[in-house]
Length: 334
Ligand SMILES: [Zn+2]
Image 1 (cartoon, protein in one colour):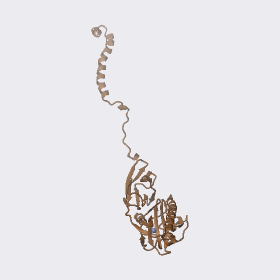
Image 2 (tube, rainbow, N blue to C red; image 1 turned 90 degrees about the horizontal axis):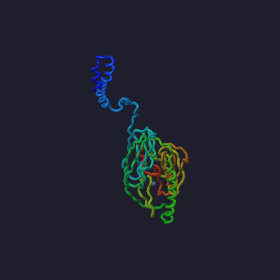
Image 3 (spheres, rainbow, N blue to C red; image 1 turned 180 degrees about the vertical axis):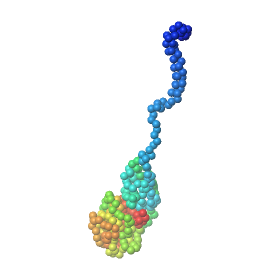
Image 4 (cartoon, rainbow, N blue to C red; image 1 turned 60 degrees about the vertical axis):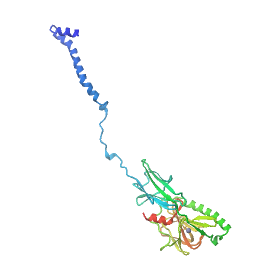
């Protein structure tokens, strides 16, 4: 303070020099005033605000549109040995699918009239209960549905071993058991194969002309001596040499004779669907041939383990025999 007062008192004597000396001291309060107003403003500013770029509005056109994907199951509840159709709404191809399973086993899909679908054959001996259908998409979405399988009412009928296979003797029964397991193993190996392409077109028709009469239904148990045999198909009334027609287009997978099933034609319709025509008298096709819906493939008969002239029809999906009439009903309802 002394210095400052002495300079002010001496201002008259050396005006020029005094002003030069005073100016820095006068500037000090001004600096404090500037600092006083400037600092609170800086404090109120968010840190680094000036470095953050302004938020631009999102361009809606750049966001991919996510189509909803849903599963429809028909029917949602079924009896052991029945088929079901699962349709995928929102997809027209498999390109977006990561996995698609029923009870952790892959489903075979197909596209029919721009509708992605999967056909399921529930084995006659599958345990009743709820089975999960899980569709996982490549974008991470998981879509779930379920199928309820209920117990089939058990019906049993007593059957004789036909005379042509040895009649009701212990030897004939033993022969039946051992040859049936061989026949079944061969049948399973043929029908477990899956043609990668869909070979059928449109609706499935019955294999007999006119109005076929069902003489034996699918799914009941035939007691033959000490052996219980499941009836894995539908029997139709058919006098000897009744024309038998292909139920849909496909490839002939088998056209030979089994000991117990007799003369048999198997048509592979692709993607695990096969139709089987048994106990025939005459076969008109050869293995490997392409057949069209309605083609005359055979004449009915009474060969193999048969108790009279008739046509036995089986339908398999993924190697499992399912109810043929339920299959036709389901496929033709689409
Ligand atoms: Zn039958």
